[in-house]
Length: 302
Figure 1 (cartoon, rainbow, N blue to C red):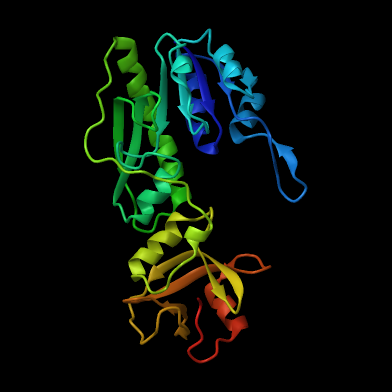
Figure 2 (cartoon, one colour; figure 1 turned 45 degrees about the horizontal axis):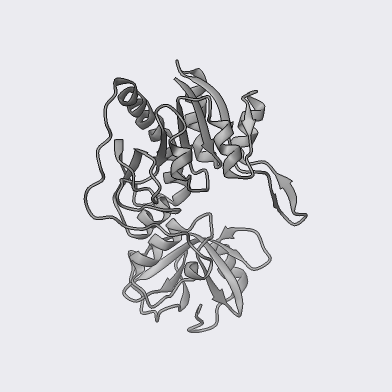
């Protein structure tokens, strides 16, 4: 088949690598226009755009739907992976076999922009990849295939995303075989849920919550937007943590060094802070940070 891929993030790269060497013809890559970033607000190409340029694949960065339509007029199938916009019905119907999406959850659970983060936040023990036919809704189309994979209890969102990006290659292989055979996708069934984008305010930790819930948030929100709290009036980002085996008598948010661990109180148990980023500084071990901070008695984060 003649294929085009509409994608933006790095998680699409394993699929692109495979397609380039497969029996299919990857004729075009579509990605978001270059966007300003960093202190200088210089324009930077998306990871997918950079890959297409490096591999001499025809690259289109459409500014509107009309340009997308023109870019897929000569392909049999469009594959989308985190492209960043919902395609209208008229666009979906242009390729011979329509459009399919590679989504990093077991649909219909966790539809939306942050399925991996929301799954970890909820304490899920398994996730997966779903390949489905696009329709005008938000991740609501019928399913060609899905593959389930376990979530390690210490895994953070970027680690699970990387794992799923490779699982997605196998899911796509199965879906393309089904499409070529004329197999019709199956409508989604079961309870659905929405995986909304995570705001910075939402990533602020409430230490009056259960310890496992807080650790899940820290895992889920790393590296973006990153869980944080307030220490001495300044934001303190937390990169990794675990629930403590020891249960010292700590109030929610209260800090203490216990043996070789920097711990903080939660609703039910203590949490060991492993890696933190103080305001204006680089990421460091929480124990090193605590030595420099020299906590006062019963001092708290809030």
